[in-house]
Length: 144
Image 1 (cartoon, rainbow, N blue to C red):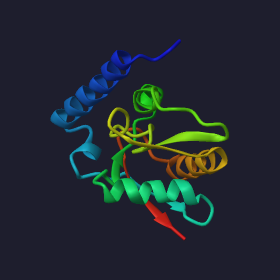
Image 2 (cartoon, rainbow, N blue to C red):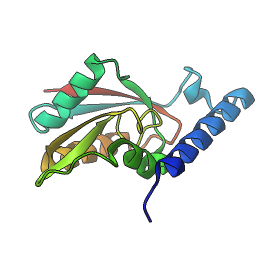
Image 3 (cartoon, rainbow, N blue to C red):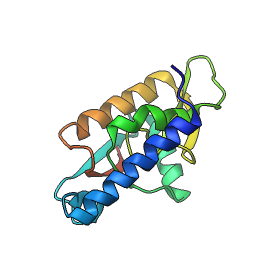
């Protein structure tokens, strides 16, 4: 089943509405800035140079470094960010903010990077943030 822009938009709106409701109820401190669950993912520039450079460039262009984990909406946001992006053999469209974050999706910075670089960086980020629940904040940074 193809994910349309409308489906992606609807999911993102529902996630944002849910976060606002939890804020108002005082049950979602992660979106209020008083977050007890704040992870850090460091993407290695030596292991994943293209993905790391994309993170640096996107953050320098104003994309946020502190993001909100929202795994259930990842597929819809990925489709919204990369759906019309040209495919290149042995490359994958890399999006920043990544699709696993509420801030990803339409308007994300997208560029083609080597497939292995993109998959490795994504796996690294996912592994580093595995213990954090949806709604938690995460700082994305680049390391050696």
